[in-house]
Image 1 (spheres, helix red, strand yellow):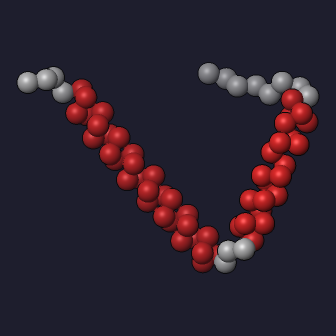
Image 2: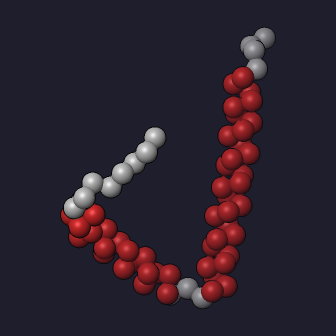
Length: 66
């Protein structure tokens, strides 16, 4: 599936997303580089854990019952 930006829509969306962008920047600036690395590590390990569990569920769903 290909998603294309409709001309002019980005400008219409910016008022909604710009405060979130600037708030995120301010939030990130409140953390040290070490803090951010710890957060990134946590999120990466959590994602890996979720992916492994999803793979287990998919394999279990593929097995015939009984």
